[in-house]
Image 1 (spheres, helix red, strand yellow):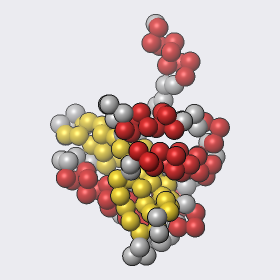
Image 2 (cartoon, rainbow, N blue to C red):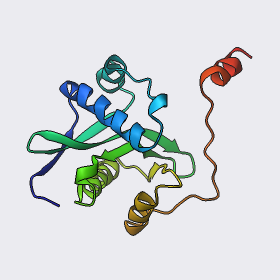
Image 3 (cartoon, helix red, strand yellow):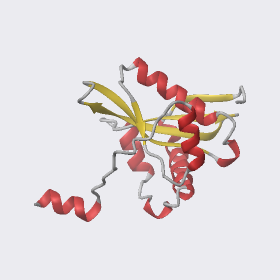
Image 4 (cartoon, rainbow, N blue to C red):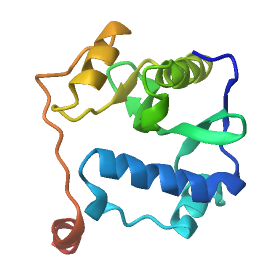
Length: 161
């Protein structure tokens, strides 16, 4: 990795670039039509009175080349918090140059400092490059688990039931 890559906590001034990176991630994952986030939403979620998530930015020469966004979850089995990585994205021209690894190392240090028992994230099953990278750092797939999602109308119907 180039020595000039800086990993730093996101600041409120980064909201626009974080949203741009989220949009680029969604395009890469073939999910662009699902992005509903706005700058106001991100500002409230990351920097409002009750932040719901945190983010770091990877920069080269002052330009954002990647980011990671996470929040804490909890393991009843460990009776400890965990760090759930919602998104990690590196712009295509910077992939394979150590930026993703630097972001993950930074997050691992945060998890250890905060007493987390584990880090978790999801990866699309077609993203073989990412899966290979995650295996190379010691992550293992949780093949026996199925992710479930309740959203939109189904979420509202259940809430009213």
